[in-house]
Length: 367
Image 1 (cartoon, rainbow, N blue to C red):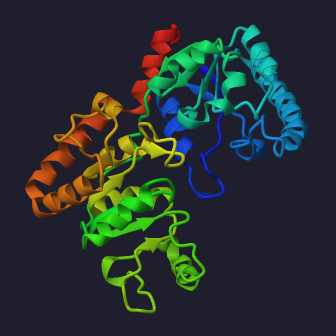
Image 2: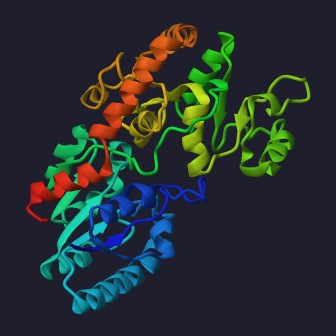
């Protein structure tokens, strides 16, 4: 099939400017399935990612950029469709990207329109006004399916996945006891502090973990290091001689290697702020096991649809359970290895983007 493809390369260009997360997980798997992709990429794809049409501060930018973006999009699509028929229009759009009438016009050309969006767990309002314009919306959050239906959209449940051609285990020493790679927000600092207080050697990489004025001189020294990647022996030390636990964001390849460099890889299911207490299955929940991690993640019931808890991944419900299980599995390497291998096998067998897209296309009757 010929697919007109519109998605930013990374979900967070400001925090992760070197990431190619969605290119790896959406674009490449579609190509792996033998489809021809016509890629539409403009700066506004990234700029509009978090803009809110209901926010007065965002409205001037949206009013100026969205019509122009829509015109360019439609013009390029019509050119491609004239050369040879387009079968599917696939996008990662929010309402700030394009007016609903543009998507409806594309649909009237006999092109099946599909939108993928994975932040509706706490940002449904950013896609609400656009969702009904598509033929189908791919939705990874079960509890949001009815919200899509209420606004007149046609949702298809499509859980997160990962690209097995990119997420692979690496033959490197497991030099770190416990690691987490990702942004600092929500309850994540609380859990990290709980591990530190329990005497567990935990390290974090990612935006905002070391942004106090006191930490900035060392943070700059860390950023000066190539890719900010350290061996355990060369990890920077603060002025008091204590090991500094926070590193800068990792690029995509170093992120994947970190799963193999760690005895325990952490995940957190809660999103947004602590008061909301919204949880969802994250991309990390698939990419980590697929990359060969022993994965320990904050419990969320939908994880049971993806993995057998305790046999393929391990879950915790609170700080005390996290500490107890971390200490246990650090001391039981053989059991840890069995779970790690089982989780990797399950992810690679059942949770690939290639499989997800094939299932979706079969469900909607295109091939």
